[in-house]
Length: 291
Image 1 (cartoon, rainbow, N blue to C red):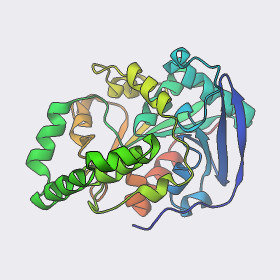
Image 2 (image 1 turned 180 degrees about the vertical axis):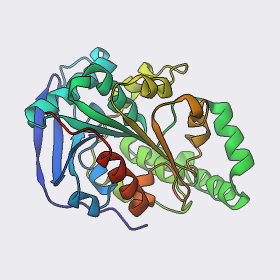
Image 3 (image 1 turned 30 degrees about the vertical axis):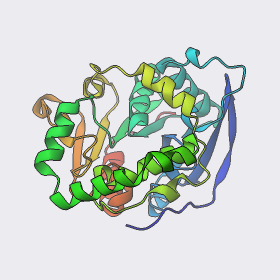
């Protein structure tokens, strides 16, 4: 696994109500609209993938400053779907394959529900379909190695109250992400802090997102109901989002499920060659675009 890198490409911003959302366009081929951060996610996908796909990375509100006068209580799941559609229209993208990772994968699926006429397919990367702390604890206790558990304990202990008090909220967010590495990476020692370089974290929007979460909601049901084909790719070593939660009722679900055995929470970064081939094979199976 190599460090993050970003190729040059077309970039700019698109105005939506209460914010300006950034975008970056890289590569050639079928258009994939990658929702999340236009700075973070170009670092997560391999450079080789740009030879086969046109990757359009767009910000969600989590990664862009809000206008001071904008009331964050207005934000809903519909807001995000409308933001993504505004970006698609403004950039003249036509029909797209919408891709989301982790929490943002839910927004990708939700967009496919709101605007099915513009979606050739939807891709869910990392993350779990439901919130299930009991399964999180079960898999960690029964599956994680003792070495991994000890490393996690050491990293958590290093984040002392004294250290936390010296960090800004954004710095603390990144340090906590790095300290949770053993829960998220096949390589338990990997430090993903450089992936956040120059990434704007709108933490009040993160808090608003937490208010919108529904513990009983199951994204697997959404994936099964969508008219567009759905690809789910998750990592075997993602202990915060157990792959086992996707394996419930697997025989009766129409979406394509792929488990990568040497990955954690960001499978496209940890196993790029296998991920790229998986994605390209699936994209090649989609009906031709009409947009």
